[in-house]
Length: 120
Ligand code: 5GP
Ligand code: ZN
Image 1 (cartoon, rainbow, N blue to C red):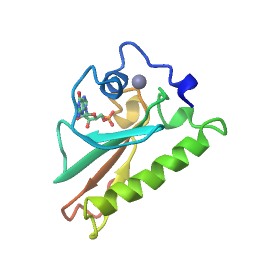
Image 2: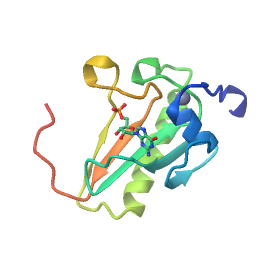
Image 3: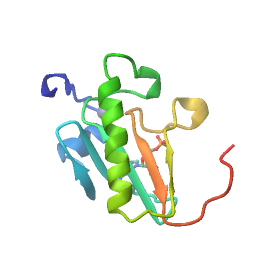
């Protein structure tokens, strides 16, 4: 998989994965990296990103679906390790209408407090 890592030079999350921008690591394996959001929206707010630069959910396809499935295994493990027994929310903003600000696929894990009943 490392041959398809294709870091993007000006991508904040590619820089975080490389270690060029510091981050608080929560989990790492050869396929993905998880770290605490710099501007947390809940007591626990973690971002899970693939090491390969994929722009958003819109770029998920049969070519990378195994990687994305793996990311959800990692999300469930992180939630257990973080003690989010009460539940948590997983969000991925895709594109400008959804307010995606970093064009590198990421899943937000939000938890640690009772959230509003509805997102939309
Ligand atoms: P989006 O708005 O694209 O769904 O989410 C991007 C998230 O990345 C935001 O919640 C923002 O706080 C977080 N973020 C942006 N830059 C950095 C950074 O340099 N470090 C960390 N830890 N989080 C960042
Ligand atoms: Zn990137």
